[in-house]
Length: 88
Image (cartoon, rainbow, N blue to C red; front, side, top):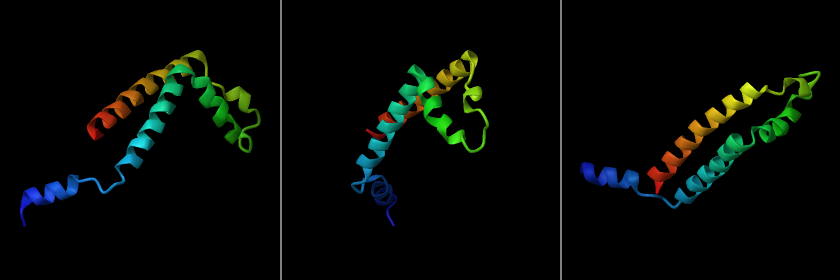
């Protein structure tokens, strides 16, 4: 079998590429929220702790914790943007 034909068949999009780009755009928005307002993500996820933690408000991160969330968010945004550029 011709190697070039196999590579071309593997790289051709089957029409589902727009779904991947849509998911990456969702991740991009979530990464922006994590960088700009990490408190919003904590508030949204603190409801999940209700059954396990007596006082979910006591588990809110400190300012250093939020700074670390922002650093991770910047790394995550870089990765998502790189994936979008590779896809397009």
